[in-house]
Amino acid sequence: MTQLGTLYVISAPSGAGKTSLVKALLAQDTQVRVSVSHTTRPIRPGETDGKDYNFVTMETFDAEIQKGQFLEYANVFTNKYGTSRIWVEEQLSQGMDVILEIDWQGAQQVRQQMPDCVSLFILPPSITELRKRLTGRGTDSEETINHRMSEALNEIRHYREYQYLLVNDNFDTALQELQSVFTARRLELRRQQQKHAAMLTGLLSE
Amino acid sequence: MTQLGTLYVISAPSGAGKTSLVKALLAQDTQVRVSVSHTTRPIRPGETDGKDYNFVTMETFDAEIQKGQFLEYANVFTNKYGTSRIWVEEQLSQGMDVILEIDWQGAQQVRQQMPDCVSLFILPPSITELRKRLTGRGTDSEETINHRMSEALNEIRHYREYQYLLVNDNFDTALQELQSVFTARRLELRRQQQKHAAMLTGLLSE
Image (cartoon, each protein chain N blue to C red):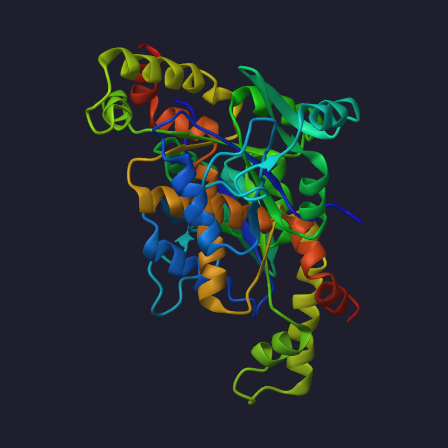
C-alpha cells in the first residue's frame, strides 16, 4: 500500500518545550502518533513497557540493528536507544502522521533512510529565557546549569538542517504553528488526491 | 532586497467559495494582501478605481505588456485583464504575502515567471453541491446553468497543476485550512531565519 501519512522528525534543545508541545498536539489531533523508542536500559519504577519505552535486551537490540530494523539508533553510555522501522511504516500506511522526538544525530540518520520525512526544530525565544528554563527551581549548581546550557547550544547549532523552525515564546502560539504544519501538509495535492479519490473521479467524469 | 513574502496563486471554479474564503483570510491575517487586477474595461457604477480594478486605457495596457510588466494577462472578449508585477514585488519585499485570484491559464503564466509561487486550488465538495451552488435562486435557465457547470468543470480539470488542494465543504474548516498553509509557509527555515536573524545570532554566538 502507498504511504499515506507523513513522518515528522522534531528536535530541540532542552528547555525549548518540545515534549509539552508534542503532547498538546497529540491531544488535539487524532491523526498523529508519537513513536515509542526501543531501549536496552532497565525499566524504572513507574514506567510502562510499550508506553514509555519498548524495553528489550541487548541481544534483541543488536539483532534488530543487523536486520536494518532501526530508522535511527544511538549509544548513550552503556545503553542503546533506537526507533523501530516496522511500527512507523505500519502507522504511515494507515494514514497516520508519526512524530519522532530525536536529536540532530538521530535526525540525520532518519533523513538518509526516509528522505521524504519532514523535519522541524523548536527554539527557545532567547538565550536569557533558555538559561532561565534550564535553571529550574534554583537548586542546581552553576556547573550543572552551565553543562545543560552547553548541551542545549550544541543541539541548537544544527537548526539549519531542519525544514521548519518554530520559536516557542508563547506556548499557545507555538502549538497553533505546529498544528499548521501538520494541517498544511495534509492539504498537499498527493495526499488530497488519495483522501478524495472517489469525489475527484466523480467530478472529472462529468 | 531579498524577497521575504510568498506569492500565492489561488484558482477555483465558480461555486467553490474562493472569493469568500480569501476575503475571510484577509480579515484575520494582516500579513496577506490580494492583488488588484488591471483592466481595460470601463468602470461600472459602484466600482472604485484602484480597489475593484486598476482601470487603464488599452494603450497603457499594451505598453505595459511590451515592457514585461505583467505577471499574467488575458483577453476576455474585447478587453484585457492582468496582474502588474511592480505592486506584487513591492509587497513581497516588504514581507507581505500576496494572493492572486486567477484562473488556470493565469496560474500557468505566473508559475513561469515566479517559479517559487505557491499554488492552491479550491474544490466544491461534490458535483451535486456544485450544481446547487451554480443554480442560484432558481431564476436562471437550464441552459445558463449548464454553461456555468461546463465552465466550472473546465477549470476543475486543471486541479493537478496546483501544490495544495482544498475541498470547501464546511466554510470554517476550509478557512482554517487555508490559514494553515499561510502559517506553515512562514515557519520554513529561510523565512524564520530572516525574521529571527538577531535572536539566532545571539544564540549562536554563545
